Length: 68
Image 1 (cartoon, helix red, strand yellow):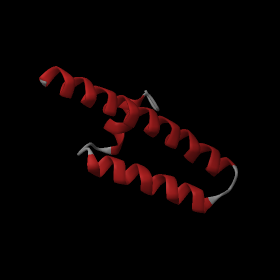
Image 2 (cartoon, helix red, strand yellow):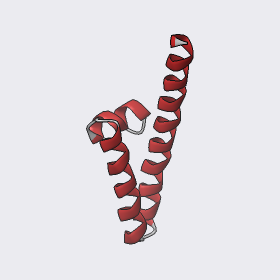
Image 3 (cartoon, helix red, strand yellow):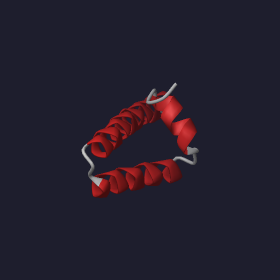
Image 4 (cartoon, helix red, strand yellow):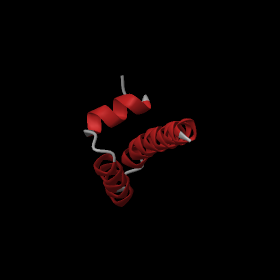
């Protein structure tokens, strides 16, 4: 039972980090395309994710591999 929960948590964390990485690149694309509403929406999404997992934004971005 504990192994199943640990595996599921790991899979959830990997999915989360993949989504953060994609959102970060979408923010960059929206900035280049001069779409402020898309930038705000993506940043709000990142903020909700950050709050849900009790991480700072830099910790979240580094963990996802978005920045180094």
